[in-house]
Amino acid sequence: MNMLQSQRKSEICSGINGSGGHPTFLSNCIVILTSQGATVLLTIVLEICYARLLGPDGRGLLNLALIAISLASMAGGLGGEIPIVLWTADRTRSRREFLPAILFWGIVGSLAASAMWIFIFSIIRPAFLTGVTPRLAILVLAAIPAYIFFNYFAAGLIGAERFGQRAYFLIGQKLLTLAGLLILIFGHWISPDAVLFTNVVGTVLALTGALVLLTARIRPGWNLSASKASLTQSLSLGARGQAGNVASFLNYRLDVFFVNNFLGLAQVGIYSVGVTISEFLWQIPYAVALALLPRTARTLRENDAAFTCLVIRRVLALAILSGIILAVVSPWVVSLFFGQKFRASLSVVWWILPGTIAFAPGRVMAADLAGREKVGYNSICAILGLVLSILLDILLIPRMGINGAALASSVAYLFNTALLAMRLKNTLGVSWPSLLAPSPGDFAFSWKGWLAA
Image 1 (cartoon, rainbow, N blue to C red):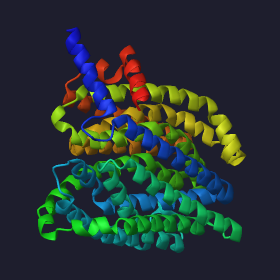
Image 2 (image 1 turned 30 degrees about the horizontal axis):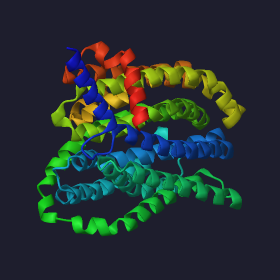
Image 3 (image 1 turned 45 degrees about the vertical axis):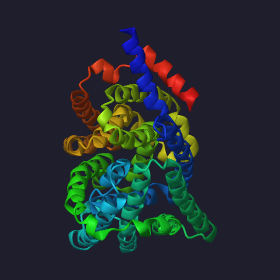
């Protein structure tokens, strides 16, 4: 029995430390976290600048436009990121057989999403877009295709486990955006329109630079005749997964539109700052999920349930500890960095934090299920969570204001995680303690992994 346990521990450590010439899981996590550290730092600088320069109303208007871009690009992307990650991670597949098909759907989706945005803004004119000007709407329209192919490119780097190159790509986008913002500050051209313009230009320049550098690698990969077989398959896999991605995104951001509808742009700005602070808790879980997705897709035949459980237990324990720390320091963070105008954001942080903590391991669970191509269940969980979030938003925001929106999101996150946990437990065939309860041995494995890294 001891020999079997020792062998299993060795296998788990091998999963952490890597084998077979592939990048190690832990080294991938460290690279992702390092790049995220730089990205988060730049994001914090940008968020502070947005809040200080635009105030609650302007920050709320900018947030509406950015969410519209993200939602439209997700819908127009038709889930192309999902087959790109999974099929790039599968070393038995040739990229020339599927990449042209996915890019074709990206072009079709870009046109469809752009047309839908024009229809919504020009014809329907919904109340939740109150305040969005025609100039902002044009910038949103221009950003949709850029964001779609930006996400495609990043997905390809994830599937290939080239997280260092991905880091340069994402950090470059943030630096270009920040440089544009500094030019605006110097020229006294501050407005939500101008700030959004710098974001769009930064994204386009980062994508263009990356494509120019990799043109020599991309051209020999085209095989249009071979890609025909992937047209239906890529659309089917992407659409099933993207339904969940869109639902998840709406679960994170749809409440902003409800807040704007019920309370106005100033409350959107204050609420957005509280949500942004709480979501810093997801940085490590996001990195772990990003590294786990291609590894799971690459090692499906090994059926390594113990490794997945180990990762989830450690993420849950770390999320609880980080949440406690964030709850304590958030009053200082709000006052020092965002100012007294955003003081009300503090209560948003506290109301939403329980759900943010709960969904930290949920992100990892969703990544593991996606790596097993069970994206349909992820979509079901996300859609059910979205329905609950909408019902709670309608019920709570008129009564509790932005705190009601935070509470609605918190409950929806917890519900979504519970559904994912039940599905993953059944898929892996493990017990609840094995999946969620950290053991003393986990700490020893984590320490060995860090030493090896």
